[in-house]
Length: 296
Image (cartoon, rainbow, N blue to C red; front, top):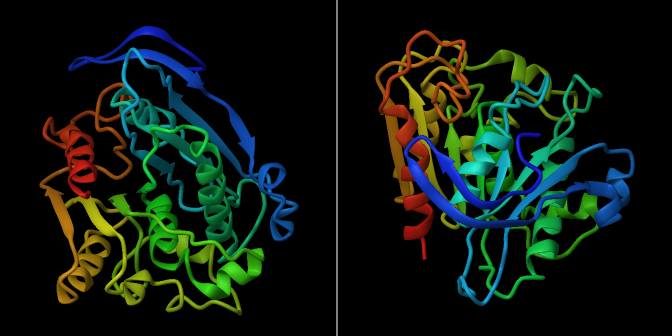
């Protein structure tokens, strides 16, 4: 891990952006912490990054972000996990990163990963209620296939059918979805591997195409992608935005002219293997934080 704890000034390329102490950086086993029997065999974990709360800095209300990296449901990307968490941490957010079940660890079909993410929300709420300054809202940030999982959580996480599978009755809601080059639908050109890792005799390609589940009470949406992404074509982003537009739901869309798939923060620190990076793309995460803070 890049960071277990720090004290003093945390500095990124654009300047000093956070001063304080990371008080709570822990790795939680989803099953051990929630005791949800459906997930008794899961190896999914949740890593917390929570800034210090103290009277000197002020007991302000903090936003909470749940980061879900991509990886095609084959693996969990490293560049889309902790580096992203550290940015939001630098803003004073409570941040959590979900390491969910993928083909690399064990073959599990839909909705298993959705159920893991729902349990993660339950655990996030349990952890953050310890802090008086925490807001009662969660923004889920998802990349690529992790964007599919984040969108599944946002649109289906409070579905009674899935809550019954977990044997829980509490609301499982996120306030905002922040999606980066997400896999969304099999009804448009898409990343076939992600869908192949989820589809089963019980759930078809159509069943796990997510645009159909957008409703009037769906979370607010911030979404970005590049027009030249060949792994997850831009149509995935557009089909979700179209449904939001039809229902007159809040959303903010950024399409960048050029860029490979899997850019994460779009900086050389996480994209050292990429020869060219559009310098404008790295601003997406700052814009996402502005979006979160506008959704009061």
